[in-house]
Picture (cartoon, rainbow, N blue to C red):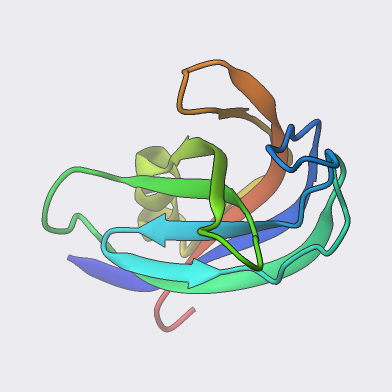
Length: 138
């Protein structure tokens, strides 16, 4: 089993539809990988086109326990006086990225757009994300 660092580069979002009465949303992203979770900053009044340009690091093992090699990005709308609203989520499958990184020391998926799907399973915008994996000791 190899251990390394998985880095998620959260770039921006586009086309998010919120539930706010005024139509404005304050989106943030919960990034989950195998029981680990990190949260982006809240893009205040960004509405449909938030920009984050933030990087998040996770420990990754390959091959590891369980075969669920995916990053889940949950887009949320920050609300002050009520529970935050779920806008939608995107999933990035990274098994091949990890396998290639273990073999070569490093691998990368350049930032690209992923569809955000709402609870109703309909398109609810897109999110631009890049992912890299670096084998420990490289």
